[in-house]
Length: 352
Image (cartoon, rainbow, N blue to C red; front, side, top):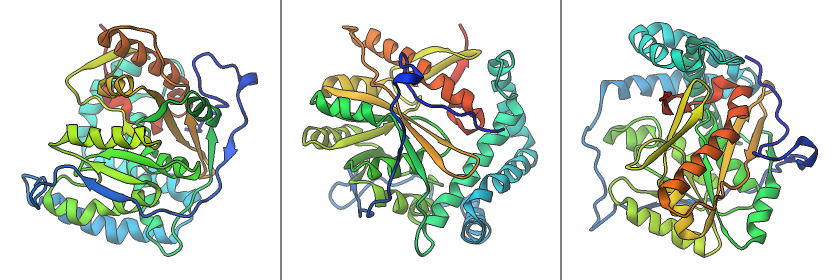
């Protein structure tokens, strides 16, 4: 599926008003730290499972097969290799594939311009493989610095001019986790990013120590800090708040894990998101700025910075609903541009 071209992102912004994208220049990499908010008395959060059979399989698949492909093939060919791999993965796990297609099918079947549920499932799997190629190539001597066009930098300038803090709300696109960090770093922003110790490839003690650094070590090159919290989430949020108040920027990824959620109409169903980040932005006096990432057919990337998700709603519930409604309107044309790169299909629920 070819990616459609988008010139701007914003609920009410016409194409004639949109600023030209910036070709982000490569900047010197940082050596971001990890702030472990679970650490207490020399001990940190301990995953309940030591190791799984899948971890051993991943050792061979990641460091032998995928690393060899990532280091020896041109990045412009990665999406073709990953597409074949994604198709194979869907065939090797038919029960999982059938369950995902059955859940997603009714939500996309009647929407013009969207691929069918099976193609979306294969696209998600392909994106996971291609993303691995990116991280693995970055470990090769010389690293990997992709071409990134930044759209919407004027939205950041406007927030800065208003003297508010920047809280970036990263969208669940296939290449968000790395490309967004590189793009914000190239803009000269000192970003603290909230994460969890299980972020990466495994949630076991072995995986956290051996497999996940394949991702986290590369991400730290473009961050001021990774702020990690599994049980001490409140402490992690305090670190983010303090960094924001000191003039830095923070980022949190969208998701549906949380006690409070809101949903908005989205294609053939509803998009349901956790709204804790909305509450934090209001409490901290920060602008909640959504970001979106798309890979183009030539292997370059477009990084979109959306308009701040502002609302005049007075109470917390109404404010959360207004923000999710606005977010859904902003993201819809980007998902339509390449539905196979969006992983947020798992956040969709049936229409009421």
